[in-house]
Length: 428
Ligand code: EPZ
Image (cartoon, rainbow, N blue to C red; front, side, top):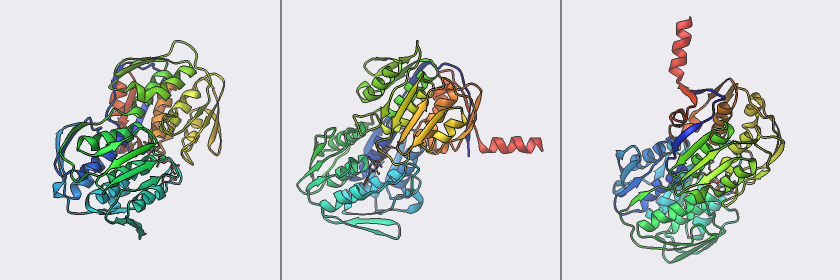
């Protein structure tokens, strides 16, 4: 019910620090279940998907202690329940990682089947294919997915390059008997981070980050202190925001290698990008020019940056074509951008953007997480006021986005639903 109100047209200038990666955290938190001892996780982002994951662990019997805002000690030894109920699971699609983690540890799991999604069809057939290959029985019954069995390593070929299925196959096989060879695996940075986390507990995983991952099952996983990688997509979002506002921003706590597909595309659009060891400077001193973008699994241009880069291209000179190569429906935000003056036509998975060079503020609605981030970028670049509704989508994956942007000089504030009610009451 809360809204962001943005007064746009101001270049972002200054320094900003990126938080831990959402898509690594939502897999690593359930992965703690596999440990036989407590684990400490650092650089955990303060976002609602993380709070939900920690709440699920707590509800299942784990002891979750907050050491500071980004560090948690999790003791999984009290877990006495293998079921993630609908009420918790429905709030976060990534709850499917509890399937792999519980199955890998206890040989059984029951998790609510993930529901519909604004990105289109999101089947979990490849997750179940992997569990079945390891010897599990998988059943979907009354909206719940039940998996159980004594797991034995096997060869698994994923028919689709899937981040979630790759992570779930790793979680399930890490304690299975013998060797698992996972082929056509996804290669995103968060896959490598999950493997590094599991290896730091004593797992034997090789090849993460390539399309063949070998997992030799181990009997016991021990305590670890692990720091989650910085969020590639949060960093990319601030890179695009800096470019869209004609700003000059140093983005800190990043891994430049993870940003290469984004940096390369920004440079083609006419944005300056300078890499340092763990930071990256982005600034604009000339016109933005058209470019074509096709999203692909890593190391291609990330789908989770598609709405943000498309927004930038509305400000560039010329006609750009953006092709979505991962999801069925990831252009639902286009109607909102049109309200802000963008000239975009969509045909299936292809959007044609006629750069208009400017956007104007308007009331808009975030329809999903990255769509919301794109609308924030649009609002920052537009002249006039933009009001963004349904910002709970944004808060699922961006830590304190309003405060971080304020630190760069942005005029953005959060208006709570209660404040609006109070204003209306006063006016009556
Ligand atoms: C992860 O989703 C991310 N979510 C998504 O980020 C991201 O867009 C996506 O990977 C692609 O990079 C998390 O990590 C929590 P997939 P995931 O399985 O794992 C098809 C964001 O904004 N597929 O790689 O669910 C599927 O339909 C979010 O942060 C099957 O056909 O994505 C899609 O077309 C949104 N069968 C493609 O594969 C399956 O069993 C890739 O999906 C699984 C997937």
